[in-house]
Amino acid sequence: MESSPLLSIVERLMRQPTAPFHEHAVRAEVLAILTGFPNLRTELDSFGNVIAHYRLGDGPVSCVLVAHMDHPAYVGDTFLGGVPQSYLATGHPVRSFGQYGMWDLPPFELQDGCIYSRACDDLVGCAVMLSMLEVLTKSSANAAVTVLFTRAEEVGLLGAVHAARTGLIPAATPVISLETSSERPPAEMHKGVIVRVGDKTTVFDSELVAGLVTLAQAETIPFQRCLMPGGTCEATAFQLYGYKAVGLCVALGNYHNCTPSGVIGPEYVSLADAEAMLSLCIAAARQGIRGDSHQKALRERLESSLLEKSSQYKHLL
Ligand SMILES: [Zn+2]
Image (cartoon, rainbow, N blue to C red; front, side, top):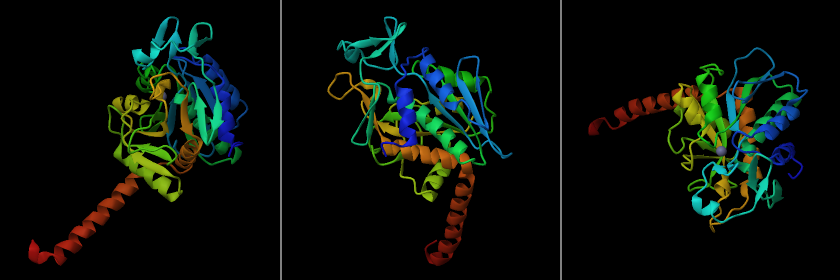
């Protein structure tokens, strides 16, 4: 597992520093990784988000995957991103990258099946999207899928809102936000990818949730189905602009580098959970998300139950 293709992309991204509005190093690495991929077209929008379109064959675009390239950090003397004052006041050392500074923590470590980093959120999501494109490319998959790497999520979903309001993504295409999200019950780390029914502020599209659950079951991908109210993710931004949206995430330890003991520390996620997220993204890109057929089957089952039970319990009605 240590030599998985996902892991090598995770490491390449995590070795790049990042901060809100200062995603340039990550973005350059994203573009470097995608260079030379056939059947792939990349572009930058006017906000600096990266959009990559994979297409082989003439089928419809199955979905748009979204992840953000920034992470909470100091920009000048100001800390950008959600970290409580008590943690900032601990005076944890900061490593300078010129105009911005990140907590002085290891960029990447693998220990006991977990990835530790100063910035799992959301370089894990970005790495899963890149790894999915690599798998589709290497297998010459007959598929069409778009991925969006956004800027400045940590200061209010800015890149996602920009993409949503400029209509860059066709209105009928399902949007899936990929995130790391603070581990909260009933979600458990190492128990698989989390199909997110909502976030802190929004409930997501019921058909897309059902479609992803159906896909995970069919492909025997370990998954959990949870709300994950730790934060607001980019699916909410797209949903507010009329898109059908849903989220996938992996449980995150030390959310925004805040450890339970009150000091700054590395974030961590389970590698197996990230691999499960990758498998589900590949399945969604290849097969599309068929939530409507799940809903239809459920309705038919309940309706035939109504007819059967109405006759069985006629005397009680
Ligand atoms: Zn995030």
